[in-house]
Image (cartoon, rainbow, N blue to C red; front, side):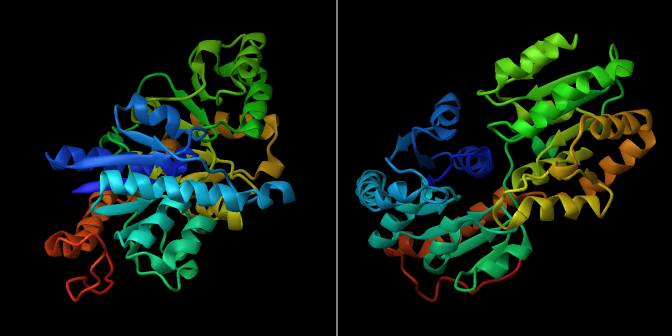
Length: 378
């Protein structure tokens, strides 16, 4: 199968696509993958580092732009659609997969124009603008959360879960050695979490010597956060701009302080790690709070709204959990019980289903024949 994966911008959009590509290459010797994104997104750095092919198009976001930005969006979209048509002509994929983010919109539009089979994967409980717009033309819409179905009245939806990067499903139980606190705010970092952690460090003095902190700050705030650690007498080398091997970071961790994006939720439950979740308050439809509540209600995580985030409260939550290993292990067990295994194979299965009529008929476009089965639950 030849798979074109479009989208990115943030890790939440990109890493499910990476999981699909790596799994396809692992299981099908003659398979081919191609990523399409932008030079500004995280994909421009991560995909080449993984040794995977990437082509870029010239497009930027629409939401949140001023009038000037919105007026220039139309011409940029037209250019990026032409670029996407050229990429499709060169690669000729069996299926085009959109994973969200503004970079996926021109590619999905071009795929629709040329009749290629299209699968959309939505990671969040409330979908983003691109996926909502293109769902009505997609052959399949794969969801991480069943609740997201309410936004896809015109789409053919199936709940598959969120594909995870390699190693997540094999994460070991919480280790017995001295505790490690894993802190991150998404692939680009989170200023509110960074600032709260720096203010918390002096209050964590009683745990110093036994506690290790691994903190993904994001590249923009790296030096400032490292300086905060240095001034508080903590090892600044534990602060990194980006964690390349996230599976290994989870494996070493005892507790996680993080946002509540869909990919983070899927990773926490797959790895079985307790968390203090600080949802991003401006996420579309406040879906991160919904995500965090889903774990907090069951006892797998603690929900700490950003409006209530203080150093005093954060240090109390962290200290209480590290002093109560039995509770920490109980939360870990609940988290693991909520994990959905095998999402990557389920999404690839849907790709093969919608690709099959075109491949059998030998046509360039999508054959919506009776061979395309009706929607079913997975």
